Length: 536
Ligand code: ADP
Image 1 (cartoon, helix red, strand yellow):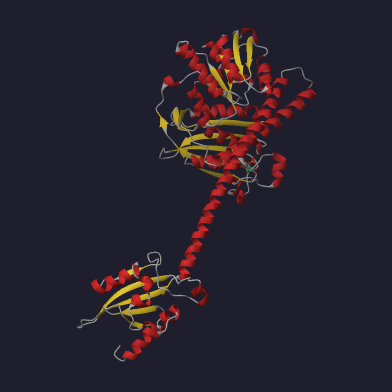
Image 2 (cartoon, helix red, strand yellow):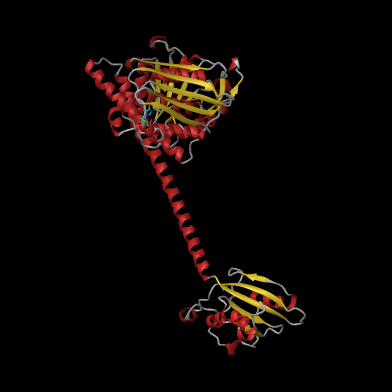
């Protein structure tokens, strides 16, 4: 350092790439540099040995000047960023900006300088140009606002899509119910073999369409976060038995053996979402059935070694899946090859929904497969076993044996339903039974009829004009209260609705319904449920 003369040091300060101002105790500017002169458009004579508030009168009363005062009086060091310093020095990048008074964004260091063994002390102001950073920050902030705006719009659009899908599928399901219901009824009439064949195609296509609509609705519900996972007690043994029974006829027809096994150590009742587990099994079994021409399909339920996971395995001896496709089959609309679609049908949504449901249950799914030999899908979900309680075993109404129409109890039923097609379907379902069916066109009409006649059961459609099923149910329960009807003898109200979301179902129960049937109502279901309440 010793070889640097005063002249050297002065030149270094003068040429420095940041702005420098040095003030003495009296606020007089004793030193400045080229950067500062150039940016302030002032000459050395206008600055040097002048008082800072004379050169820059606009600084009086500002934070900058206050910090300079504190630096000189109390040797206080300060930093003023451009956000903390809304009154910067009048420094400009060029003439045009000077004319428009567009100042350089400044970052100030105000540094007390005391000299060894001297009374004199100074204040050095270092000014950095941060305009570029500020512009970048501003741009970034603007981009963030735009991105947030876009995200909001995307969410809105996705919500609109979900709502649209929900209402569309509801609209499609309603006439489809009529088609399926009528097809069911037609099978009970005298038909030629040719007609039976046509009718089978009609029914199968209707059911396939129904499944596709349900898949799309499910996927949109999962993606919009509207689907909740339930946590209820159920028997995995009963669930497997019931699910397998859905495939027995098809397996017989194809000549495939289908069976299941449940490890002893699994509790009689476990906790989880039985509806969704069944949906997963139906998807996997449906695929196994579709892609297996001979051999067998087995479902095994077991526990992991640490007993913390329930393992469900669906194994088939079907066509198998090529190795390179094993991962992609869980993606939406993916099928192993496009000819599969033509040969086997399907939307490619089943496994996507299956995987999403399993992830929502905090579980995982994997697949092992060998071309030409078969595939095994393995699901692991958290296991919560409960000690078996004998008393929980009730007879399920679906297990009831339905008597012949002539032995069916005579009864009077109020059907609240606005759609003429649905009224027609239910009428045809019940036509052979000694049931006096009274029709109400909406909730209001139903309430009026309920008050003036005596019924054994009410069948209540939930979506009706004027007064919906929810409101009508509440009014009926209120009327019964006023009439002081013993709560044990209130009239059973069976809700019939296409809204199978948990929230709608629980709202209906809160309103006072006794039981719930989801559309499309099957003949056997509605008759068994009516019989169940009549036999009580
Ligand atoms: P899809 O409605 O087409 O069956 P999925 O998502 O359920 O849709 O299945 C996607 C694809 O994965 C199927 O099209 C099929 O190519 C393949 N796949 C699924 N399960 C099996 C199986 N058990 N055996 C052979 N291939 C299967």
